[in-house]
Length: 523
Image 1: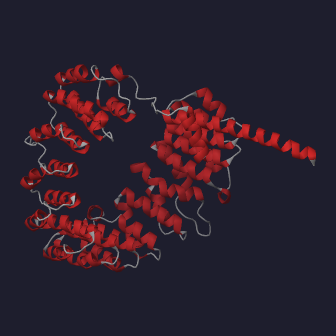
Image 2 (image 1 turned 90 degrees about the vertical axis):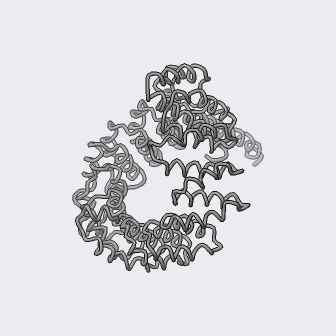
Image 3 (image 1 turned 30 degrees about the horizontal axis):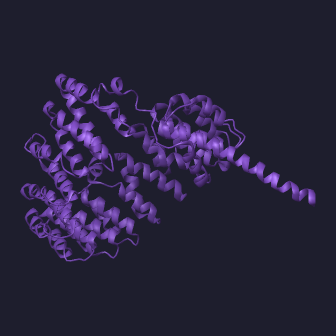
């Protein structure tokens, strides 16, 4: 007993050393992934570590870094002895989107019987869908077959393929999806309908309409979310017949079904349909009521005006806000008049709502007056609304945007730069560079990103603009310390790579101990 007692502190010390060694390994992987820095020796060693936690983090890190040089390492990890590592490797390959990985991923799916499939197979199918292209489409088609088979349970891989098939776009295996649309398995059924709804193809319309009567509220909600006037027209169906199919859903016991039915109704843009949506403006579920107001604003008509006007007296912020905006959409004079009463409100939120309503009413004079509001959040909202309602070829908003590039609020400066990007002018380069430099002290980077976007528009508009941006911005301003700014510059500015170098790696500003602490806290 004495010997055991004496050995206990030694064992604890060894265990602590081992734990700290593990922390160090994980910290190095997190740091590399955070910096988007591909270090082949580091990750190769980590993927062969004895601890599955290390191997899993290495696989996830390779995916996050996004370097295709990591594909072979991840493919090798698809055969790892631990299923969490195999799943992480498949997930990482989905982020890399390298077509070379499709066959190994498909092999992982087929490596086990359908009844034994788990997270690795599900992640592999998702990765195949993300990779897409002809190889991805062929692989998903082979997994799904022609549809469900009576008496044969739908496998996890098939169910996942149904859910992710929309990612393939025009390559999606629509016949296979239709073959599962009536599957007795609830998950398979709603997954197939979800994909059909997102694909918005005419061939899927009959299946979506049948599913409106499904016993599952989830299926009904998914199906009606995919119904729209454009889709009905493409399927050459009678719009009124389809609206008749929607009617029972407005009284559905499930609020999400009612919300999605209202969204579908809005796409028909027929004022006569407002009477169907009007009663739901008083629905007991706030989310349903807000959607009803939104739909009424789109549909318009006297029934919409009456229902929305009545909702202006509510004390619930979300309901009153949407009622005002929707009223301005359907009756610009009434909406603008109601909103005008809020421009002097002490609460900036209501003044911002007034700007939204003026935008919906296309009331330019009142919006321009709000550009002098004392709160930058209101100014930003008003300027955004002006940018939406002013015609593309109209340059008269430019002078005001140039003034607002010097505003104290970063959001206002961001929107002002976005306005200038619509009509690129070399004369704006210097003021945009000033706006970019000023944004260095902002609490968020929107103004910097917008300045880079506007400078990019100028650089692409003419040779003169490109030379001005290269000489007065890229050559004069230090390389951005913000990775998002560097990445945007690489996308929008032709000479950014030469002047600033590659966007990665990211300078995170965190030292080794910060990552060790993160590992101790979260991993």
